[in-house]
Image (cartoon, rainbow, N blue to C red; front, side):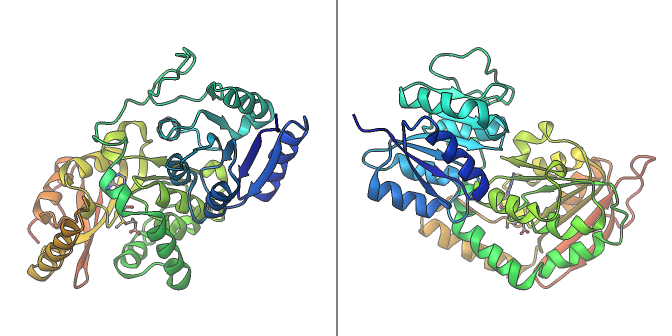
Length: 379
Ligand SMILES: C[S@@+](CC[C@H](N)C(=O)[O-])C[C@H]1O[C@@H](n2cnc3c(N)ncnc32)[C@H](O)[C@@H]1O
């Protein structure tokens, strides 16, 4: 019988070499390598593979999306994720895509070969210490208890419409734009205001972080920590790449999922930002209540102005989405309602800036608790 063929997909060259040499040590496997998702997909299509060892944060096509596409092949290879990601939501998502194994990178030295042997033998393997977010292994392993409940978003564990809308292609486009022009428009307005507030040693929570622009731009303000939460895996993986050069690894945390469902699991932060996010979510009240509950000092948000020409533009875009059977919609929520939600949570508005289409609001919490609104909800 020919030796099993294993494809190692990993963009970090030295770690890839470590994995390859570990696999080749027993000379039992034929090992090939790819450094990005698209290359890997092409290699599997052309040469077949018995098993694919897959990182999640990959250029071109992230590991989650690649695993999804591999499952659609006539003869799908077995998949083992090899990732530094330990969030139960991600482990659950990876296993729900048909992967039989999940190895945490920090345990690669001890777990890699046992995982590969187990999965090639038709068994499952998950590194000890990882939680599977409720995903049950076939052997019912008791060591893997669920800490994160399955989220009630219907078709998947996340805000599915946003996940489909904010694809790998869009993430790459946004990244190119950011490299070319930096932060623009209302984001730039928000960042300029935030830089006038003391952020040193603070904790940023960026909700709906997209490709990570806010975190990247505020990194030089002396933040001690940044948590990014994002519903789209493609955006989150791009954000991880963007923030890698700006923060030390222990200073950042990346959470995949719907913030409203996961808010209790996310640490409190000094500054919570929602840049162009409220308009992507149907329930503004739930989103802002969750944001306010995690904010120790500031909540900064940008959203479309409730003006007739904005509503017409948004209605037209939503109409086109409906024609194309896309579930994603943009919402122009009522400003007074959003303000009332944040004030009811003990925040007061300090700043409002507007462009033709967008509004930026900054809310703050005083040590003494809620104060009478500085600006009120009507203006
Ligand atoms: C228009 S993009 C803006 C991204 C980024 N904040 C920026 O301004 O470049 C909105 C993002 O919010 C995310 N999003 C919307 N609702 C969310 C939720 N409830 N939890 C997590 N992410 C959410 C979407 O996936 C999308 O990436």
